[in-house]
Amino acid sequence: MIRSEWIARRLERLSREYGAGAHCVTQLRLARRGEITEEMEHVARAEGVAPEFVRDEVAAGRALIPANVNHPEAAPIVIGRAFRVKVNANIGHSPEGSSPNEELEKLRVALHWGADTAMDLSTGPGIRETRERILRNANVPIGTVPIYQAMAEVETPEELTPDLTLSVIEEQARQGVDYMTIHAGVLRRFVPLAVKRLAGIVSRGGAIMARWCVAHGQENFLYTRFDDICDIFQRYDVAFSLGDGLRPGCLADANDEAQFAELEALGELTRRAWARDVQVMVEGPGHVPMDKIAENMEKQTELCGGAPFYTLGPLVTDVAAGYDHIASAIGGAMIGWMGASMLCYVTPSEHLALPDAQAVKEGVIAHKIAAHAADVARGLPGARDRDDEMTRARVGFDWQRQSELSFDPERARMLRGQARCDGKPEEFCTMCGEKFCAVRNTKAMMENLTALP
Image 1 (spheres, one colour):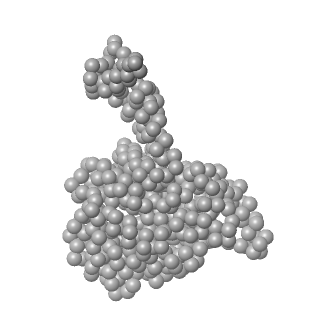
Image 2: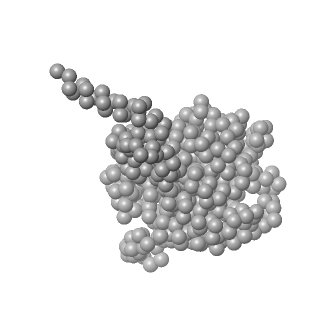
Image 3: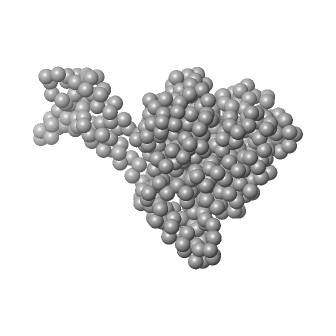
């Protein structure tokens, strides 16, 4: 457990400074004090930047390091516009299927294929036990949506209470959850804006809170009790993932009044969390056509003060059923290029079914490609090195190295194995064959050029 010693030393030092019983001091608070934590040093090495740069980005709120003191199993990562675009994988069972063992297998698959974080979105039986097993087996930050567990303890959204929900939030923070989606921006006055939509409210948490507000005629208690949630997060260094409960669920609803009204509220909540030294990222859409993606990034940067943007896709078309991971990766690459900090993956099962391990793999790989493409487009130092090495391997007909550099070496080797030209040189493939191979013909041309007087 990489962070156990770091945390123990830090808490001992804080006890000396503030007296016995001193609570956790967040990465944001420490950065604002000018300190460089072990977590900051770790992510600086991973990103190839100076620790001071990481500290300054965290202090400004432009980056966060989700690192609950009770999740020492996780190696820290940094999420922010100045760093490599990260990918999150959603796992978790539903009342209709799956088991803790199946979700652990999905976690293993997601981490094997490169997920930077994972969210446990379990809504079926055994939520606490599933989350505990995920946390203790995860070497990456883990997120949750605590309103799901609160809902599992009542029959209808109307029966939710603020105290029940805050007790769930505290329990999950104590258990070690690194960041939580809190749908505090679904304000009562925004609900009428959403009912005019083609798809209405498609966020599970957003729909729950909207239903509660309408039934009780009161403001969203996640908003009214937001400072109390901040106090819990501060004690354990849990980060907010401010939920986009009114995100568009179809192209027709993209960039509408409801979406941007909530985004403005999330900007207010970001500043309130920062005032209490709590780290924040802001969740984003959703379904957005390509021509409207830039406006999302621009408005989020303006309204939320540069807080990291964590986006679901966006999906750029509504008709990719079975291939929604591709529709999402297209939008993810675009918004990542424009400044989004983390992409929430979508699997081929999106809108259709609970994903299995194979769907998890495909979702992670599609979004790792999108994130890498965004890093290259943003000109991050070293981002294109892998691409250039791949080019050298292709020109050199180094099939093994091409497989190693791919996002799915197993698939690359399998496809190459199926298409070998038996009994012939390895310096071409079945796409072109020996006679039409452009690389071979270019090399032959270059040899003739060098022979010219």
